[in-house]
View 1 (tube, one colour):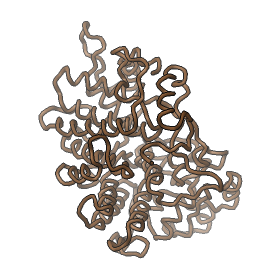
View 2 (cartoon, rainbow, N blue to C red):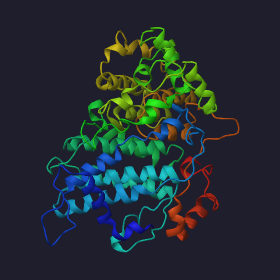
View 3 (cartoon, rainbow, N blue to C red):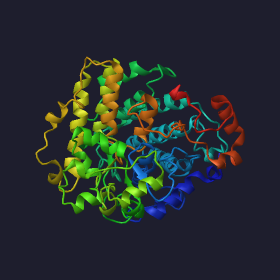
View 4 (cartoon, one colour):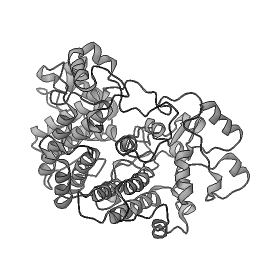
Length: 491
């Protein structure tokens, strides 16, 4: 596939030993120099997987740039990287190998979760990807074949089912910066992630041998799932080297990055105080002495306008920056790849579609309450934003209230809009994929510009794995590696 496959485990170890200085690294065994304690690998993989991806903030119409044309804001991205194969996946595989040596099933189960997580995101990004032959350089496979999206999605569902069966309360989990060794919480995350995969495949009735709706109902009705924000699959940050918030000290956040009006206006229309935790007041509002909780003191730029037009709003003192906590607070809020709030939105959508018994409203309301609970828990001095706020009154307002009698499309729009409103710097590219899948919320786009369905494959693949890459392109996109080619999961 690429050169790294020839020395798979050692590439991962080099990355790992350069980053983890506070844990035991290599076992003192002169006959097994490649052996690593799986707790070290678990820490590294978790830290890598749960970082925030800021690019989605532009593509999802939440933020804009004012110092040049941002390719994500203007929907002009091109190829992406396969770096995750050389980093996250290789270390995950190595962790699972080490777990077998000490007969610890929990590290194996968590490894299966991370494999599913990485392959899920890779396939959504590109389409067909190496899966069944991936990360097998030690076995001599240096140019792995590409598997179809259906094969990948069905395969990772099976891996997660196996993970659910393996996870147990006996095998100790050390090095766990997500759940502090609590196997029951990992089990909830594993099963909740199974539902995330299935709802993302909502345009498909089957995945391999799985019936999408039937499998969803079976998991939702019989397996352990998240029940509160304490179950969130999230990384908490610490004010120590290599553990600070992803965007801490990011110079762009303090200078040229601003809020998009599309995102801000959803909150202003609903008088939703979560806005105050995301955005800063405009300079004009500050100079006028407006309270932080005055919705008129917030304004965004148009993500479809030229960056020079939006820069003019800075001169006019009428555009909001991102709240400075996102680049000044080294700990800030945790970064989630799947939260209890998101799970409840997933269940609400499934109920609206008739996959599980209703009412969808219960899950929808729970999801919104969980989001407010998250921000009231983790934002510093929440009283300055949420004082006097009543979430039950909010749920009854016209733009928010869920009506079980509404047609499916109306219900989906309400669910997806509120789900989108919870994902500022959370859940990575989920909000964008939800938009591609459902059309909600209705992103503003430049005239003649469509939202890309995928990324182009890495240029390195054309050099090192061209035969398999070209076969994958021919089977999916008629040989064209184009960002506007629709992948299988959206057809």
